Amino acid sequence: MMDRLVKKITSLAYYLPQFHEIPENNLWWGESFTEWANLRNAPQYYSWQQTRRPVTPFQEYSLLDAEVLEWQASIASDHGITGFLIWDYWFGDGKQLLERPAELILEKSLAFKYCFSWANHSWENKTTHQMLQEQKYLGEQDYTAYFYNRLPHFKSDNYIKVGGKPVFGVFLPQGIPDLSCFVAVFRRLAEKEGFPGIYLIAENSTEDSLGLFDRYLSSNLAFQRRKASSPLQFVKEQLIKRYNWNALGPIVFDFNKTVLPRSADKLSKHEIPVLFTGWDTTPRHKRRGTIYRGFTLDAFKKTVLNVVAQLKVQQAEHPIVIVKSWNEWAEGNLMEPDSVFGDGLLKIYKDNVPPAI
Image (cartoon, rainbow, N blue to C red; front, side):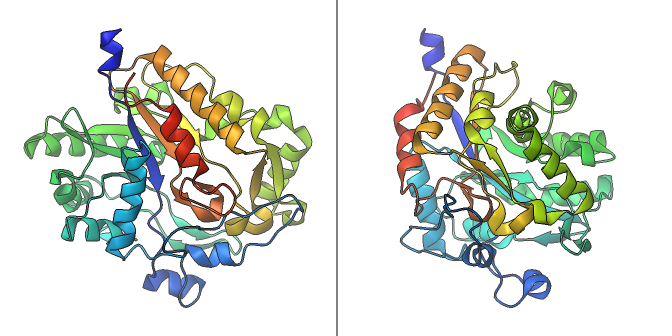
């Protein structure tokens, strides 16, 4: 029993750094574009649909405001969230996007606990199929440059570590053609720079990834029951994705028949559970979007209790929970106070996730 009590849970909430202007987004999407524009212009397709909007001291905040960042970190910590897993955009040859919030944290030594997950995918306008920013994989020299660009973050006391190892996620490991090279570079350089190693987490992965990574998860597995639960909606979804029959959308699945049961599935030894905070991607994708209807405070509490129960059974050496997400406002998965649930999700998390198991 004592062994269980000393295993502290590390809870990491995916964090989108899109809420500030950058020249590229202004060029691609129009002047003054941020993710708030998608939320502001979100259509309502169903009478029961409720778009969640910010209820914060800053409303439509800018992530270039240090006060906003510290407020986010404070309320997260107050409710049991260890810190943020920031989506990190490195496209190769030094090209980055949305890096300024993380730089601000470092420059001003803000009270903000974080780590990175490499969002290694190209940016595309899915309506016009126009490539906006291509993700490139340029080999050992470029991976070395990436590591050293992020090294000042790794060395920060604010950067989250497991066993002294900086935590670093990869969104699409299978997209990296020389994955073993990338992993070898990051592991070797971490040790060279005085760390006991680097703690690598693979998203969109299975147990097979553990030859290279320390832990894995797959957010998409939360949606695997959608075909069985709603065959017609699943067919419509495929027609939209494959043939752009967008008039069939948006697609609606049942949260309580898909995501909720997944949270009760037994975890393998090295799997990280994912806790969903809602899902409605229509603000960003319009009729190509998907809504998981039936997400309520009660449904969220049930998923939280399921995840905690599975962690206790799993008894991993380092218990970790991934929260999806902290501030994906245009995809309807968020923990920040909003117009539908207020701070209800935060309170449920605080009241039901123990600091240790």
